[in-house]
Length: 231
Ligand SMILES: [Zn+2]
Image (tube, rainbow, N blue to C red; front, side, top):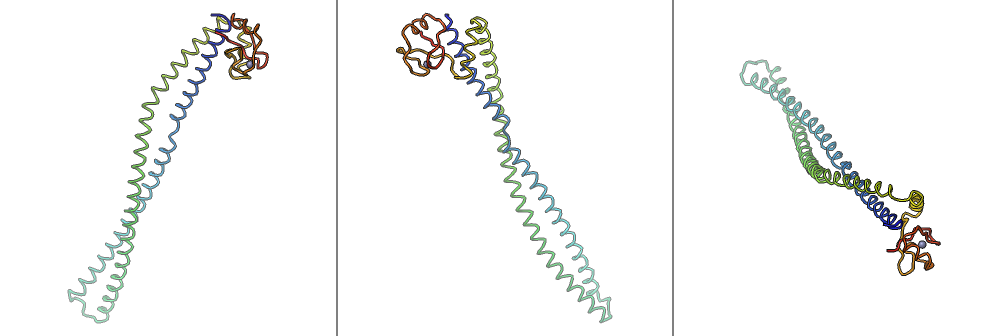
């Protein structure tokens, strides 16, 4: 392989390396992006806490209700057992029973409210945790596919780097420096010559230069400085 051919081959390797590196970056980005899952999991956790709280309120309301009901039962048994003969005491007991019963009705209403609140939160937890489960499965699937894909790309990259190093060892070091310098500023350092034109800038190049490029010498385009390659 002549010098221009070597540099052209070097450029092909560099372009492939660039493409593979981009692929690797994309795969790594996808592998590190689990924001949706994290958000769904923390939302579920927050809702579960809310549910716990609502159920606690419901239980204490149930106990309070039971207390009130027990008090009414005691008064009722006093009233109907006929043990209390004192009319004044009877009136007081009846008053107390009436007040307790109205408290019970209020308590029952608020308990119903608490129960439906807890049910609503429970339904929300179900939806959110279902969504989190779905995202977790997706995430695991993605990792299962992307994990091997990542190693594949890394292996290919290692091979390309090896090939590049091997080629660089063979290339004249001065020519390599010219290549690297143009690559930094132009992106693509070596361009083909087609029908006498530089494919980098499309300007017609002198025939003598084209001939030298064909012979494999290191010839740069007068206009864009790129290295000319002609098969
Ligand atoms: Zn040019």
